[in-house]
Image (tube, rainbow, N blue to C red; front, side, top):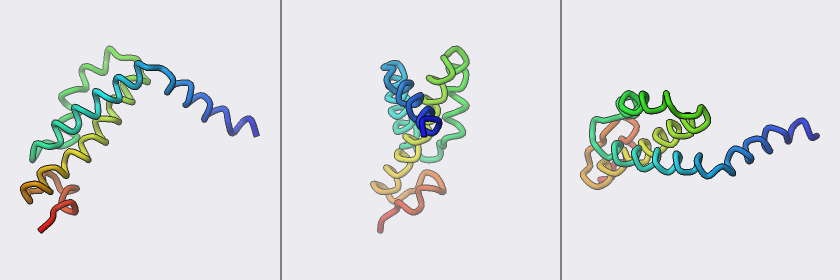
Length: 97
């Protein structure tokens, strides 16, 4: 049973580091801001921030990029709901009439 709990305990140990949470916060803020711009997607955002991740620790870089992706998905729904203009194909379902 303990062999199944080791990865969970290791993941919780990584999440106890405040630096990881700082990069998650920064990535989600960047993702929401860039995702709110119609026509700018996750791929373009990755292209802009990828050089910064080369100097980061691997855990921080992956959490940063993952938070950007999630924030971008949320940010895509902002113009789709407010203006009725989906910024990306994934935001078409968030459009209201």
